[in-house]
Amino acid sequence: MRVKVLQEGPLFKFSDWPNDLVPDIAIGVYTVWHGDMLLYAGMSGRELRPEQLEIQPGQPRKPQGLWTRLRAHASGRRSGDQFNVYICDRLVIPTLTPEQQADLGRGHLSLDQLTRDYIRKHLGYRFLTCTSASKAREIESVVRAGGLRAGPPYLNPLRGPVLGLAVGLESDVVDVESPVMKPG
Image 1 (cartoon, helix red, strand yellow):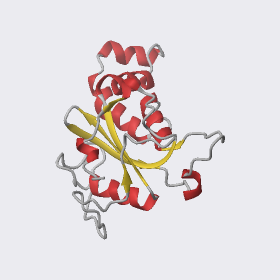
Image 2 (cartoon, rainbow, N blue to C red):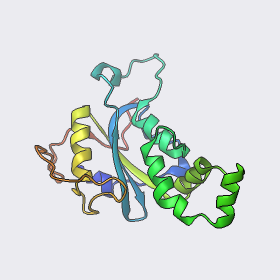
Image 3 (spheres, rainbow, N blue to C red):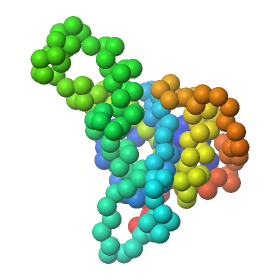
Image 4 (cartoon, rainbow, N blue to C red):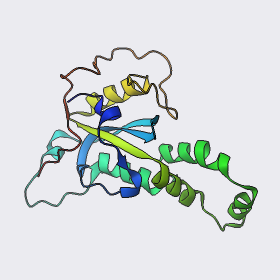
């Protein structure tokens, strides 16, 4: 599977969350889009061990990794979520009217709710799953450094040189799985 799926693959709307195509336990890389603009690139699942990725029939599976990260983004809650902080600070707050600012000050309006509304109204995501956290980090770094045709993400570009990365974005040798293939 080519890493360019992060730019050219299916675009899923946050307004449609949850997404049954996102594995409930997975290491993965994702990109967030506002139309054709790449806003953000991230990865999740660095804490997962290989045995946790295996499906055990009949065993309940608590979502971890990619699914929980995308769920957190879809929620709009800023606490503990740098992506939602970026969306709020850079895209929501600059558009607030004086009346909305006054409502915030009086506690009649919530920045988390405004952030959630913005994400669900305007943003979509693409993702791919990876077999290891090190591969996911490597792909995320290449994307953040501008490795897709869209260039670096607006909200979290990687600054400085990207040393030691051997991911060929047009290569078929990257060990990733299709985002539309869900085991089981």
